[in-house]
Image 1: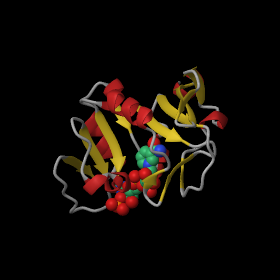
Image 2: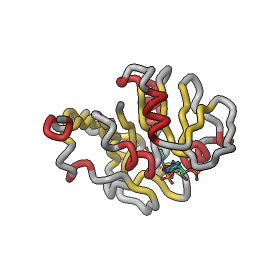
Image 3: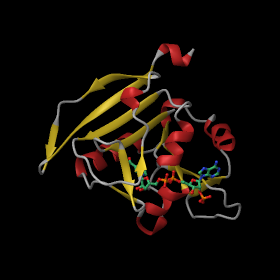
Length: 167
Ligand SMILES: NC(=O)c1ccc[n+]([C@@H]2O[C@H](COP(=O)([O-])OP(=O)(O)OC[C@H]3O[C@@H](n4cnc5c(N)ncnc54)[C@H](OP(=O)(O)O)[C@@H]3O)[C@@H](O)[C@H]2O)c1
């Protein structure tokens, strides 16, 4: 299982239930990476999408405490354990944790790879990712060249769990 996330320099991922950046190259990368795959998200993230609608052409899995939540095109669960059981049917590399803050935190020990878009900006935020650079369980595996979109600099990074933390 992998997580995919876009972070600011201060490890922010969102504010007022919205993304921090509108970065078309990152949106394209996210879409291409997750298309046809399983995406796991919290109910907060589902509600942050336009009209609260799920992502097209992906299996949308949502975690909520609401026992009555029904949304078209969404598989709803009330616990992490139910989600882990459901995604067992899929190849692990096809399962992506896509946020938000509560869900990244909840599944961080279940992921063996983190695909992190690092935006070289610091901005006000109310939702954060753990600092993966300072977490000894993770090691930077690869990083793209620094890119620029209309003055916003960013790079695509892949982190993997260290062998020690996987054993
Ligand atoms: N930068 C990125 O890559 C990225 C990606 C995704 C999201 N985001 C941002 O992250 C923010 C949303 O993150 P968030 O942390 O507020 O919300 P979230 O993680 O998307 O969802 C939180 C919700 O998950 C459910 N939940 C949490 N723990 C649970 C448990 N133990 N059992 C059952 N359900 C549980 C609850 O839903 P109920 O309240 O329905 O019970 C809770 O309100 C937004 O700003 C969004 O734009 C950023």
